[in-house]
Structures are given as C-alpha cells and as structure tokens.
Length: 612
Image 1 (cartoon, helix red, strand yellow):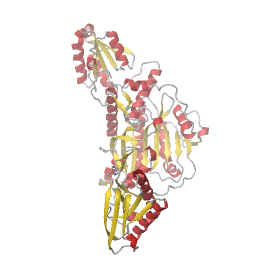
Image 2 (cartoon, one colour; image 1 turned 60 degrees about the vertical axis):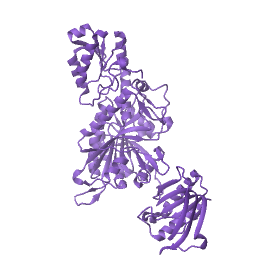
Image 3 (cartoon, one colour; image 1 turned 90 degrees about the vertical axis):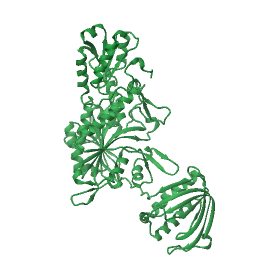
Image 4 (cartoon, one colour; image 1 turned 45 degrees about the vertical axis):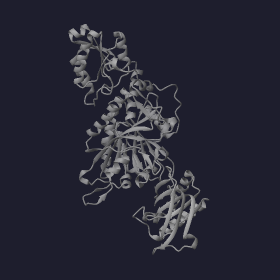
C-alpha cells in the first residue's frame, strides 16, 4: 500500500461518473467537505491482498499518529490509483479501504471515505508547513513469532565437548569475564576514577564534540592522522585477503519507504538513528550493508565470479544510550571497515569464514593481544549445522568458545555470529573484531547470481570487520599502551601509527640547518619527522619529546654534526642508541614495514604550531 498525506485547511470532492468497478453509494457519499483534515490518498497494491488486516492496521496506526502530530481534527480516506502500477483487484481494494475507515472510526477520530471506482473532482487547500505533505509505503507487519525457550549458554571445548558454564573454571580472564557478564548476567562493578586510556586520548587529540549529539567524536591533527592511518590499514588488509574485492563508496541515509530497508531496519529497533525530512523518513546506516546490498542487487553475477568481496570504510550510526557511550569504544557515530564476502552457498561461506577468522586473530596477535570468542547462533539447528566449524576454530586457536543460542522462533537473517573479545586494562571484555554468516539479506534485497544452469540463486553473504571499527582499533592500541606502562616501562605505540616517528632537537639555532637537513633526508624515505626549533633548553626539548611519545628522538649539536653519529632515544626500548642518520632511517623503516604512511597533519617545525 502506498499513501500520500496532505494536511489541509479543507478538502472537498464530488463524484461525477461511475467506472465499471464502482461501488454502490448512498446520496450523501456523492460529495463531502471536511475542514482541518488529514487527507490520505490511498493506492492498494497486489501484495496487500493476502494481508488485508495487517496492512490496514499498520497504515491506520501511522495515519492516527500523523494526525496527532500535525494537529488534524479529521481524516479523509481517498482512493487514488496513481501512486503505483501494481494495483490490487477492485474487490480487495474496497475491502481494505472500508476496513481502514472502520479502524479509524473505532479509535474515536472523525473520518470520511471518498467512494471507490468513481471519477471525482476534488479541491484541497494544503497547509504548507514542513509536515503537511508526507508519503508512506506500508507492507503489513507480520505478527512477531512467539519465541520458545530461553537463551542458552555453554562452553565448547577444542575437543568438541560441551561444558556447562557453572562447571567451567580456569579459563582466561577474558573468557571468565564474558561468562560472568553474558551468561550469568552479573553486572560489572562501577569503575573507580577515570579510565587510564582517556589520558592518551587527550594526548593524541581524540575527544568528544560537545556541540554535537552525545557520542560523536572529533579529532585534532594527531588523532586525525592516526584515524586515517588505521582506515588505510583496514583497506590494505582487505586487499591482502585471497579474494577479488570491489571497493565502493556510498551514502549513509536510506529511505524507510524501501521495503528491504524497512525490514532490515526493524531488526535493530531503537538503536537506529532516524531522520525525518518532512516528507520522508530515513535511517542512518548501521553499517555498510544497506549501500553494498543496494548496489549488488543491480549487478549481473555469475557463479564463475564467486566468491568476491565488497568493501567500504562506512560511517555508521547507532543510537547508543547516552550513559553508555565510551570514547573510542562505544560511540553513536562510528566508522566500520565493512567487508562483505558473497559466496555460492553455506559450504563456501564456511571455508571463507575460516580464512577471515585466521586473519582476525593474526591482527590482534600482531598487537601482542589475545582474543576469546563469543559465538552466537540464531537457533539450535544453526548450531548443529555449524558446530564442526566452531570446533575447528577452537582447535586452531587452542581455546574454548562461549556458545550462545538465541530462543527458538525468531527469524534471524544470520546463522552464526562470532564476537572476538579482548580483556582490557579495566578488566572488561571488549568486542573488537566480528564475522557472521548471513543467509537472509540476499533474498531481502533481491541479490542473485546465475548458477551453472542459469538459475537465479540467492548467495550467502559473510559480514566482517577484521580489526573492528576504526575507533575500536584505536581503543585497542591505546589500551595496549596503558598495559605496557603498567609493566614499568614507558608506554609506546607501533611506529607506523605514531604521529611523530622521529623528533630532531637542535642544541642551538646554529644547529637548526643540520637538523632540517637530516629531517628532509628522513622525510624522503617515508618517515614522519618533527624538529624542535623552539628556544627551549635541550633538557626541556628532550622531556617534551618523551611527553609527546615520539618513537625516536635525537639531539643535534656540534658533536653530532661533525661525527655524523646520533645518540637516539628509542622509546620502545627505553634506551639511548648510537646510530647514523641512515641507520636511524633503516631502523624506522624496518618497524614501519609495509604499513601505511601519511605525512604529518601539522607543521613539522614546533615553533610554527599553535597550542591545541
């Protein structure tokens, strides 16, 4: 059903001539006038015939809500066959229109219905305010299925044994925390004091934007540089997996008038951001799914081209509760490096699932961290069909998994969803990476491929964020640095992500030219270099380089200029090392490896920098 609402000062019509499908009407139905009225032009479509009650109820609920919002005192239902070319049979149209009229009246609202199947003249005087013209598309929500049973948790061991959570002990700190929170429902004690990682957020210019909605971050130059480097790295990872990948860019706003979007949006409930423009309602995307699926439905895909991936670092929006937002970890605007892998069937999906799982573990282990798995299943049947997959993963990682069944009876679009958790410095289990098997969205969005017999088949789609959101990867880096500090040595960041990789500090202005010369040599080799050309003493410059967490810092004086050898403070070693400029460059480049590189996002000369 498609509708057009007009909030009007007045609406009047007059029936002129019957069509072959016209209903018989009484004399008083030939003409009507209503003032201060919400006029509802209605086109009943063929899909509505099998769900008359549902679509009528959905439409009437919205009509009454809209009438209340705009202050309309009355409702006029006006048959209008021009909003769609896919019309229902006349008998069904009339039945639905009459049912809508009865439903509106039963709620105590004055209502009138223009006759069906008549040529009519009408005059409407629209109010002209932002909500005075609205369009809607109703599909008739099915009643939610009754769920059977309760959520179930147990531990799956690498040998395939299933252990009740109450009988499991001696797991990792992360696993025991997941069991406590997820399976036993025990709330964490409130944190005392400010989380330590926030000090590093402040240091690198990662902060909340007070002039925006709750949960929206802003980043000054160092934080912005780190953010973009992680984004570059997420793209590099995807290009490195053993798959052809299509890089796409999309919008973040999708119309709820689109049935597939509306149905998908309903799965996420009150965590969705919505935008009302006056005429239409939109959602801000939860991840890249909407855009990529909207594109794929128009692609001509053959089985010969499968599997393949589609990727975007997608700005995404989740209406987290304001009291639960957490800088870098739980935000309302996040950036998801969202890879979707399109597979022929579930067997191929499971094979690629294992490949992605291995890469997810590789990435966290590269930071010196470990994951534990919370594996969600949409049903007992989904578990039985995929148990062997999870046992294989547990064996490979040498770790058990926490298994979670949702209650039976809910038609989820996915079957298996793994959340990869670390334990952070606050002793909280934090989800970072994720991967899931999606069996429903290809059908919902109309995505197909042609098989060997030219039959149209809905593919199975994997969703994954290998390193989690950009923000959560940053959170992991900062949390790891806090852990390093707690071991009794200076905290540090991997050199590739550290905004200032090398700091050169001339002893006096007479040594500045030499420092700039070395800086240019290092920059030419793809290294970020800053020069402390301020009037501060050498001691203060050295202290400042350590406060700024520079990976390498070297003083340039007469001795260094003459000998060519630098005494370089290496933060990760907490030690001074003697090396030439070429050796310094080689050491830094070795640590950067094949990771992304960007130039500084602020002046390299400290005297030119504003106080942020």
